[in-house]
Length: 149
Image (cartoon, rainbow, N blue to C red):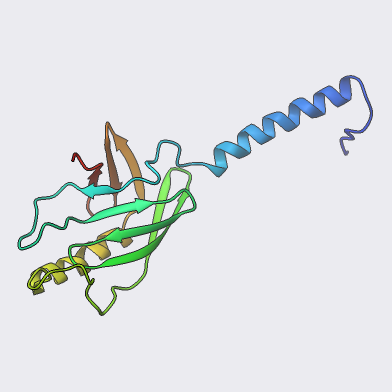
């Protein structure tokens, strides 16, 4: 049995109301990341690794494109949201060092930490807000906050 929305009167009103409900539900499904801090640089809440002042961060656009700045290098990423879950797919670590890094800032321990942190991003399966903090949950919880300066 089909439902014909052509015509006038009560049937047209019911179709309009049904369409409005479906659109409202569709908007909720299309944006499961309500409350996600899009378009903001978020710094990993971790002690600095010396030498150097650079801290790992993530910036996610509403389109799902992201940039992850690690201890030494940066990688592009793609972030997908579904039913309260999150999936982060990153590019491989580039071979070259960033031009803005000073001599001695990308030590072997910092470069090893880049690889480890990139693996942790790949294991993230869920996200949540805890006050002003973004928490990415996976094998390990990664907490991010907006810069305070």
